[in-house]
Image 1 (cartoon, one colour):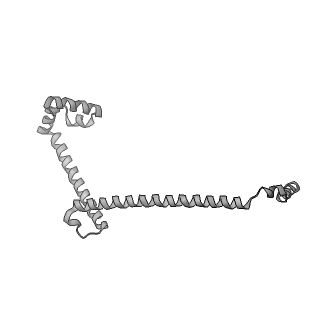
Image 2: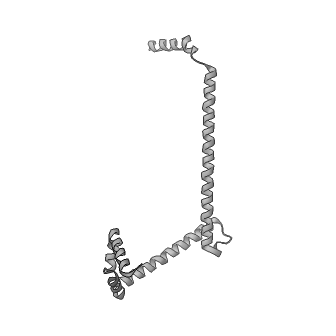
Length: 149
């Protein structure tokens, strides 16, 4: 312990160690570090402004698109109300599409629909649904040759 204290005293009071310290150079280096830090902060603020502006523009365009899609129902409504109306419309449209898909699947998997699918493609609806992408591509090319387009 005494050894460490002696070494610390020697370092602290060694005039050679103090001779290497230049307060002006230290101040200049500190000023340069601070200037670099300020410049970096300015670049970050500018980049954030650009990101915020791009996000605001995208949001504005999305809201305009939703309002256009909703038509008269969106007139005079706030963005929150437009979002709610749009989500309800999408939900209703999705449910209707799913219902129509189920009806079509039902019609094509039984009776005359199933016979027509089998006649045109040579496969049942279940076989068509379970085929791989490669098989579907091959069938598509075959049907194009057979029926045109």
